[in-house]
Image (cartoon, rainbow, N blue to C red; front, side, top):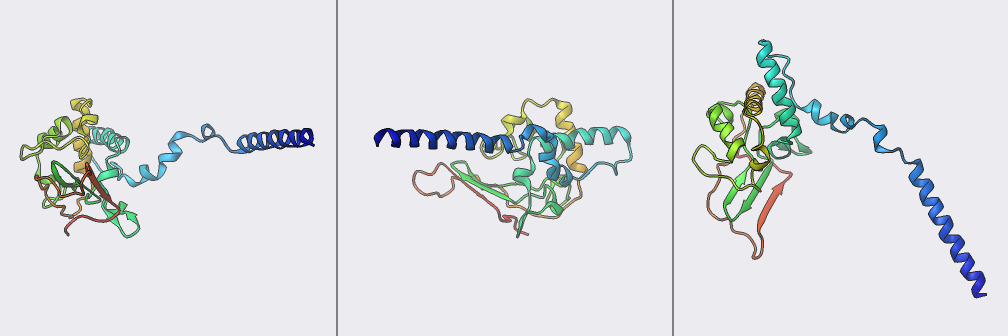
Length: 203
């Protein structure tokens, strides 16, 4: 009886393994799909640069567009709506709030709006943030708040291309709160608080 049970268990195990391998075999492997396919939606969301008349500036902006997409800037600088990121307000900010021992930060508006966006900053001020995390008022954002260290390897030409592209975006008036540079109140033992999926802009 024990021998029969043993063979039955072995048979069931073999059939299970064979069935699992057959299942894996019939799943379409990811390498049959071009990697670019997975990023198509994000690529379509980034406004193109076709409207830039000067061919040199258009080429620089196109390089900046690729960098902005590949660096994942929209992951923090989205403007969220009721159903998630609102791509009609591309890079308008306000979608992420981070609190930590350095203060409270809300992702900024990177469109060229003159009141609430990058039009208030010079090219060098924007590049300095990408280079060292140093903002216009002199404070340095923590790496976990603004991952500037990941961008510090960019060449000056790359940083310039990013700025040119950001300045070519449609301007969106969307004010986000200024950083509060005092330690945030958090539950004991909490190192950092991360809040997303709503609009933390103030208008």
